[in-house]
Length: 273
Image (cartoon, rainbow, N blue to C red; front, side, top):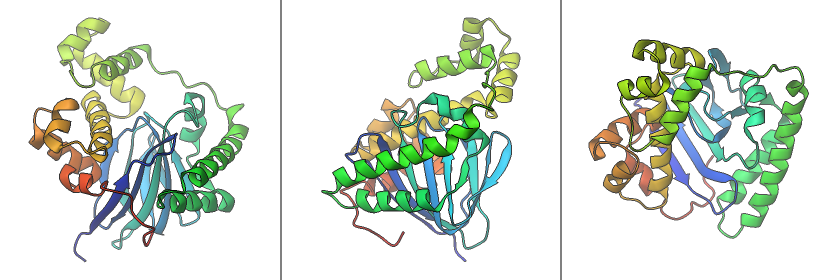
């Protein structure tokens, strides 16, 4: 079977939803990366295998997967037929950072009611004029998610990032577009460069440069769907040029920035997902 990559992505006018992303991949495997938003994932055909916080997880058909922001994950199809997935990227207004620990410990939720509600929300989001329905369904989805995660909150120890790694992450977030060299970062946090890289990688399971590129690609996705030209988006998100953006974008998303941007023109009608 020839490799297949089909995507549709758009930014809906619904508070709390950063992006809607539908995809059909066969052989594509995306590398370790992070998002600044919650990733709410359902798989309609096939299954996805992924690593989160150094533990392997999967997405059977009736599962809803909630991947927390800032925690690295990857993904690949389980079979050669690949998978079809629908993803909602949600900001922290629905689930704040206090839920990151419980979601990291148990990202895959077998919950038919939640699965049905997420599917209904995707249907509403695909129809212009149904924003109120989508907002209402999002409220119910968020409430259900909090209810599923809450029982684990009390028994979940607080996650403590190593102070050095956390400080570097803060610096990377602050300098997302401008960037900084490893020597600059080491000087600012008063640590040897090699020790700083090890501390960050051990704390987050991803190297500092991978974290920075993931965040830049995330921002580029939003700007592209808002109508930005790839060359302008590259400059606005800290990439050296359009080619630099394209290389990292395709590695993390599976398609070029130009192709991705074209999916955001208008809102799609309900499709086969």
